[in-house]
Image 1 (cartoon, rainbow, N blue to C red):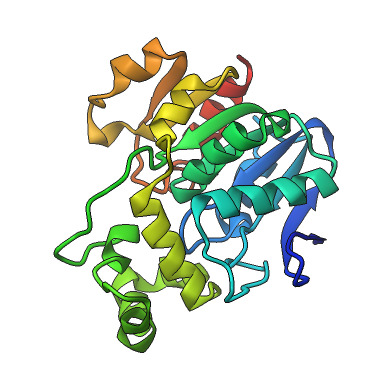
Image 2: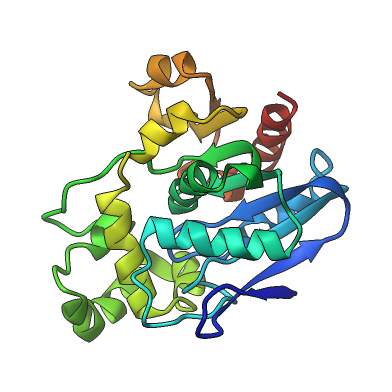
Length: 257
């Protein structure tokens, strides 16, 4: 395990690192997750093994610190990751990012372009989302609690029960404030939006999504902007967990561009 101080208050981002050849391969988790449980089998897969790999946890999640004074916007997550990658000497890295981590990775590439060489997104959030009216999994479910205090008083425990034991295994490591603020920032998105930033990035980009979702309505626009869109069979939103072999080979294929 390695770490880097990323805030003046001493808060540190931590990551699990596997030695190997450059360029560095960086894995970024989604909301309420942690990179090592989701990506360790991917990093060890024969299609990707041998690369220097960082399974990094964003502030507020996993093995990283959980400062309560941070707003946990997508921009702040990206800037903190940038400091960690600089200290890890991981410039020009290949970034593989899932869900909310994909939104952060796009923001990272837009704000700190020297740090990202290629970008692979796994079912990432690209657009702002309206506040929900009913509970459902993901950031929109957390946003049912209209205030942070309501989430801290009632939503934290209810969310742990609602998401089930698998997701809760990593979500319970998150700071409650970090979880709520990150979810709300994800729904608000960035300006320009994540999609707009993604379409403008001048680097190889790929977007992986579950084939079961059907043909994406935005495929033509993404491919027109140079983003490779790849449907992965036999999986849901957690592509790397549901179809490890298919995901690892797709990532290797995308990084060969």
